Length: 372
Length: 241
Image (tube, rainbow over all chains, first blue to last red; front, side):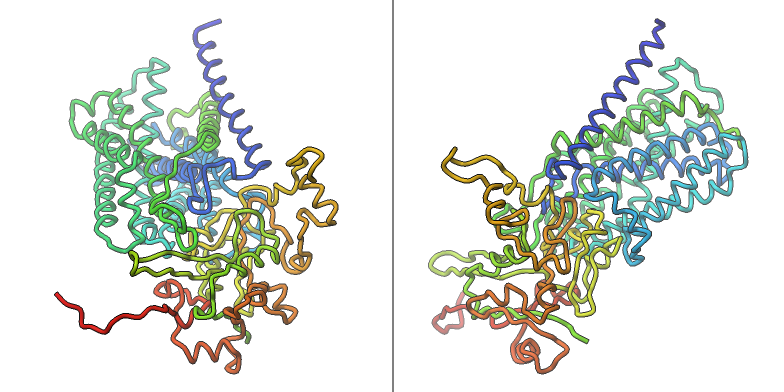
């Protein structure tokens, strides 16, 4: 057996284990209930929702990267547009897996259509992500068949850039929890999506080239030089957004912001700040580090982990302080740490993404974009 | 138009918790879920100390944030101002819990009333098992099952969906008062139609200074508190430096 076949076998085995443990978790969730999570009536949104938000944002971020060439005609981005589109599809599939395992009764989602509530941002989010998925698939099929993907690509971009802040607005329009509320939230989601998308395409491309011992083509080198600089710029923007959000949270005296005192002492906060944003920012700002492909890959991986932490921080900011009768007999801040079934939901989503991507890589020729 | 509301009289409420317990029976609530609850705390340092007790329930807000946020309309307003929930179309997203400023919506994290399915006897051949008690009492799922609750809502809500106080709409529909109102031994809960100027609730809201929870949010809660009362006195003084 060749070395490649063995590696492929191990790869598929790892994915398979991830999916099987995920399916087992799904079975437990729907037979025993969400009691298997580390959630309760105070911290009711936990890791599976954070996972959904992270993968959904990464998906739209990848679609933004793909749109650079498909929609806006920036030729330089052509080498990654097809892969970014397919990765966006894979990431969204993973996001939906987390969402299904987050919802208590996902089979009732049919009522989005039967008894819609257009006043609900959550309803709009579902609708926009639905259309985004549709045009993501059409765009990819067009690219794959070598057709002109500009129109579906434009719709993919428009629905993606509409869905992203709407996801942020589901949090941002929650007036009852001051730490959630504000126009800042939808805006920050667009930047977080773009940052995650760029990090994902850089990481996947670099790792793929490393594994296949492939040397980058001149067009790829030129693109990655530029993408690296854009990456650094967006990290810088998100970093300052992060700092300002902390300032607002700590400056405010309204009791609802009290959770920031708790968050700034938490592990996810410091992980995001130091390893998820500051270190990658330094890597991307120093030219000698930025030109080192391995360092860029490390920066991308750190950014992705930082963005994941960021979703969890966000969820905890609004929930750590119990409300009304729920506060009785409770400490000022409620501690949360994910448990194994919750971690397995993330593993499941990630494994599904890897499986979809592996299938794409093997059968769908993700290099370039034949349609342009 | 009917606009149901509740007035809670602090001077009558003794904090006995009957509302909490009887609500659980009337609505077949499972362990850990309270539609009627309380905020209680001790403030101050002995001997200058007071005990605060605020009975709580769904505020049936006129501008209910939970209703606005629910994507499928599972959380909805009835014409009579009751905020109602339909578990048959609820997706279990818990967005209503995030949006409710009062922390009174609960999620069914597991199959309700699990305990009553237990076949194990606490003392072998000495006591009945929980499931035997249910069987012998002829109850449905629980021995004290109230079938009236089925009239407007599944008698026991399934796992994976939220639930909350409905102002006992199944009783109100028949011209009966919510069960917490009926069972309050001190008559501290008064229920009625805000749009009827002759109703008791209209009289009390007109006569007394009222407070509502987190009024600043503009949700227009339909639960009013009156006659805040502390039985303390102090020697008149202008304080001092």
